[in-house]
Image (tube, rainbow, N blue to C red; front, top):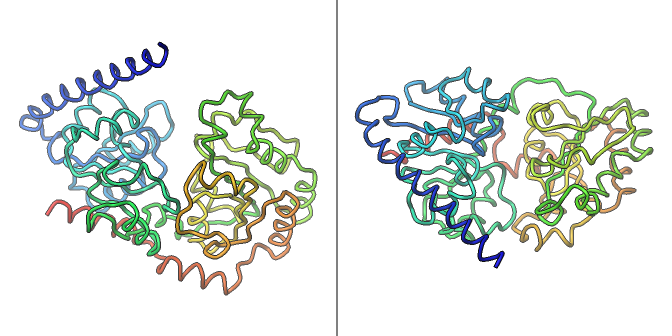
Length: 396
């Protein structure tokens, strides 16, 4: 009975959202005739809340290079990002009635996440299977696609432009995801442009692991604290040997886990005065990447941001066997062949790899630099420009 009730509630919620969207579409049709603010709208977003990823960087590019475009950004007024993006141009509060109107009226919908421009990602992911959300749809991506994520396959998701960065990535997505010819294009992530701007690199080690469905979804904090994920990373940041290494070589560290792990952040703790635990909203991810000298990650595509700056990294993959096939299916990327640093599976090996990197002043060998350049093909700051040109072509 409880399953039936849950399905009924879910169906009723979807129906309510559909009715609200269709009502907005009717109103938007009138507003497009009477109000120029609703004509030729380009709606830009990330998850609908933040402004710190490829959506923000593309919007900033639009406001500077193409102010003639009626671009509007979707952000949550409860977050500090809202005021920052409002300084660039028009911004609409997430899930406001005007957000519904602009979602219906916009002729170009650009986001880093599937349905990120809508008032509710999960519900509109389902509703969009009915093809109710009209307009051109651009998937800027949140990172580089290296695993086989079947929920991104066509026609589970319908996009007019699917942005990729690597040649291997483009070939993999085009062959495995089933999109029509011409949808998947190699353009580069918009946020990469800022990585090449002059910046200071501190004596700082950045720990930035991704998340696990099996460690996070449906878990209470008490249950999360029993997972291998928590216990392994907690052991690392509280290890006295790490404190000795950081002190010996004069480095500090920041532990900043993935967005999906942030709700459990209070579970992590350390008495190491050289390690800070980074909270969402208090630290900017791109700033952390740019100011850090060494990255410790696991399977996160943030590895590519760091490599783009020709900086060293280490992969700590203690749950490698479980990760593949449970969190993601393995894709084209082999970390031991294609990666940008050493792969370790034990805490002892991780600490040894960290010491090796710190002792070398976090230097990157010429061979690794060549590998990075070969992987990307080009390390430049024209990613926003390439994305924009491809988006404009959708209008012709």
